[in-house]
Length: 292
Image (cartoon, rainbow, N blue to C red; front, side):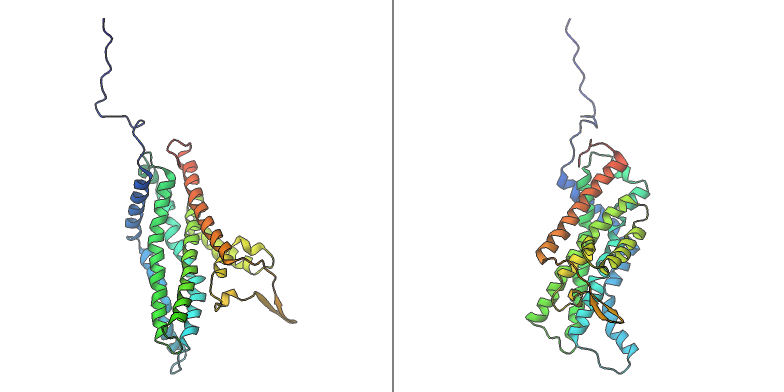
C-alpha cells in the first residue's frame, strides 16, 4: 500500500518559515514610518521655531538698546554659533526629536505590533535614527545658513572665502554634535521611561559640571570633542579659566586633536545606535530569533 503524501500547505510557508525581510527594506520602511510620525508631532514645529530664534537677535538688540548701532556681523555670527548653534540647539534637537523615536512605542505598547514580523532590530533602530538625522540635519543647516545671510547685512561681515569658511567650519562641528546627541538620546529613550528628564540632566547637568573641573574628566562629555572642532575664532576653544580673588587660574585639561574628536563622536554615535537595538531586543523580546 502506497504511503499517503503530505498535503501542501494551503497558505504557503508558515510564519516561522517565512524569510526575514531584507535589512535595507527594513531600514527604509522604519525611516519612512518615523518621518511620517515625526512631522505630525507638535514638538517638530517647536524645534523648527527654536532653530531660527537667533534671527530675532537684531530686533532684541534694538529693544534693549533703542537707537544704538548694531555690532559687527562677525561678532553677531560667532556669538550665535557659540551661544546657540553649538551649545544649545544640537542637544535640544536630540531631546525634542530623538529621545522619543523608540520610547514612545515602548511606553504606548505598540512596539510589539510594529515588530511582529521577523524584523532585524538593528535595521529598525537605524531607520529611526536616519529619520532623525534627515530632519535635524537639514534643519540645522538651514538655520545656520539663515543666520549667516542675516549677518551679511551687518557691517564688517561681507561675503567671501573667510566668512564662508568660518560658517562651514561651524556647520561641520554643529552637524556632528546633532548626530552625537541624537544617538545618545536615542539610547536613553530605551533605558528609561523619562528620557527627556534624564537626557536634560546629562546634557545640561553632568556635561556642564564636568567641563568646569580640571583634568581628564571632561573627556567623558560630548561637548569636549565638539568644541575641539570649532574654528579658532570661537570663544569655546579658549583655555578654561576661573577668576579668583588672587587672579585668574587656568584649569589643566587634556588636549584632543580634531581627528580624534571626529573619531570619538562618530564611534560614540554608532555604538549608541547598536546598543539601542541590543537593549530593545533584550527588554522587549529577549533571545536572538530575529537577529540584530
